[in-house]
Length: 186
Ligand code: ZN
Image (cartoon, rainbow, N blue to C red; front, side, top):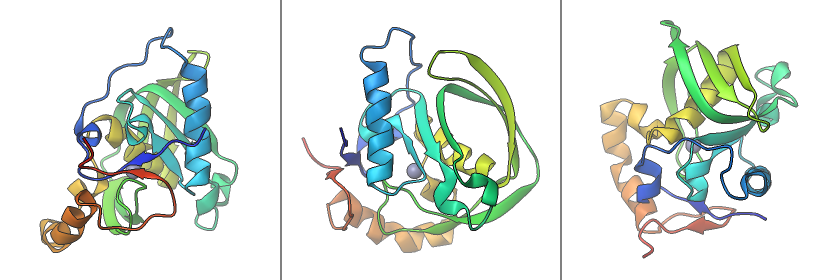
């Protein structure tokens, strides 16, 4: 089932998400819905809070960015209860967007390499090192679990320039090719 996406201004995007327990109700169904929702909205990643559920989990498929890095083609992963253990000190810039912030793209500076520990769907633990765009995509999605959005990481002057656009999203003034939940819905 395709889920609607929660947009900028909705409080769920600002919460620190909770750990996922092994007996979380209907977890595999929710994971299936996350994949469907991400593909339906042409996203590269989707974190659970973007579907309105504040738990520590995200899905990624880097295929859309294969022009930048061929190894992203078919790079498809689920991360449950991830923990970034180490950020490399070197950073670079890349233009990011987010399904929860329709119509806005900005350059964001991020560490070029990370070490991450996470659980897969069978709750098997993995510790891996990622570099380049893989590291970037993971960091973007991981931030969602901490209540952080990419626009928090851009230059203050740029953020000021975006303020009215961001307020517009909160008020429902945006267009998206996928189903969304208005930020101010009660
Ligand atoms: Zn995002």
